[in-house]
Length: 447
Image 1 (cartoon, rainbow, N blue to C red):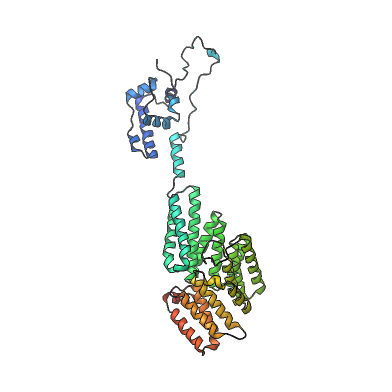
Image 2 (image 1 turned 60 degrees about the vertical axis):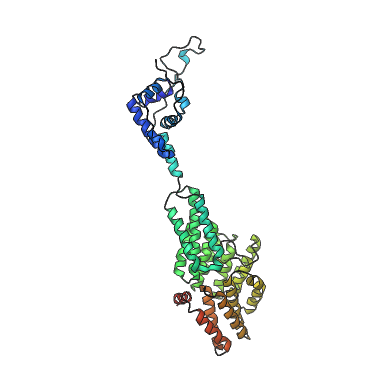
């Protein structure tokens, strides 16, 4: 009499009691398992009529070979050790020495019928699909390192050299986001895509393309908001304000920065929003009291977060250093024509600025001081023009919009002394410097 096993009961329940019916189901399971495990050898597994009869009849001295066991376990959803263990047969006689009478013994029952979507192999396959990814940690690390490299080299190489690399990083992040990733990897891709867009937005300000900058910065802000990345979101808002400032939209620049500060008034990124965003724009509108409030709040936050003393990179995602904040204070006070404060702040950061690797920062501080020297009751024209020429030479063949605008403004403010040799020399040098294609493009966008 055939030995009753769980294997036999499951096959009876599923109407797989013939070799033909069982073999067809078995081969389908083997093929799907081969695809799942990427093991083509499994797809060739078959079961002979003799094997089936032995399995079905419980005539096993040992378990099937390992690859067959794997298919059976996926097919029937039970360990092979259970499938071929002896099960109670309701038609067999009880042993005479059984302690419990048959009338009180519960016969095992087959598992309840499954729904069509409850095949164990389907469940495992679907789990693999949901957790599959078109990216991996190495790719994410590569993208992150690429963006870090851009920020670290930006002060030396500038936007014209590094923009192609930033565009490639953004494109790679967007291409990967069109595919499938589990939540952790997808969140990291959103963060990296946001930062790539933010860097491109900053570069667009430096090249004078303010409409493009606004588009990139809005993308960076919205992507970072989607994942709750407040650090990148506030940085993107700061860069958006930065672009609005150089586009001459001072009220909007202040409003953009103020709204971001209101979201996180004690956040480290608010230092940049207050000094670079609010104070400079408010200086252009002539609101002296609001300028001092914004700068005071920025410096208090600098103490709270223990930021670096030195001149941090202009494009860095890190919080503003104290010298960077004071450099923005200089620009704010130039707009207010507060000459004495400009000269005090500039002298305070002079050593840090001169020892920084940023030729743009050294150039911009010189232009601010030169403008302040012309604003004095007794203008120092020769010194101002000498600083202006130094600023142009420091920037060399890598013009950026901020240097272009301030050197142009200095030339205009020196108009009353245009007959003096120092002013004529500066004018000649400015015209030569601004004839570079990149500077001409900035002049065109500003007109």
